[in-house]
Length: 122
Image 1 (cartoon, one colour):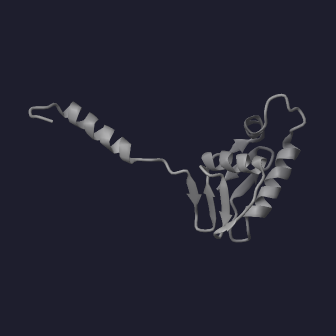
Image 2 (cartoon, helix red, strand yellow; image 1 turned 180 degrees about the vertical axis):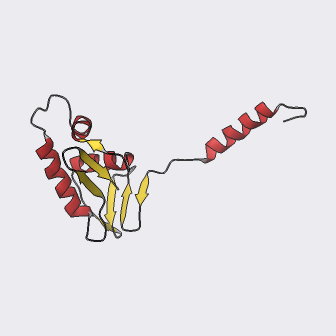
Image 3 (cartoon, rainbow, N blue to C red; image 1 turned 90 degrees about the vertical axis):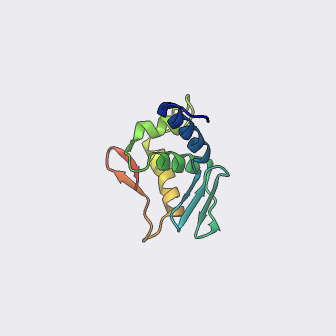
């Protein structure tokens, strides 16, 4: 870049260079639970934790919206294909409970149920 140059051009070039360096990580890791979303791998304390495709979709949706309440209808609409009419809140609750049994302990609680509304990833 030769002088003189405008500050606007300099800032744009810096922004472009910085955006090349920043890569969004596709790994959730809190020291106990590790999820590699690129590979679809879930680990508990470095040990593989097999989960079903439905449990994986629930996990991804909750983590993508960490700290936000996901109401039942939003979760149901985003997790199952259209035309599947037998999916309801009970089916969702069963899948969430199975997922909790696999990834949660007394010391590590991730998913909260807001009664009558939905779920939230803490």
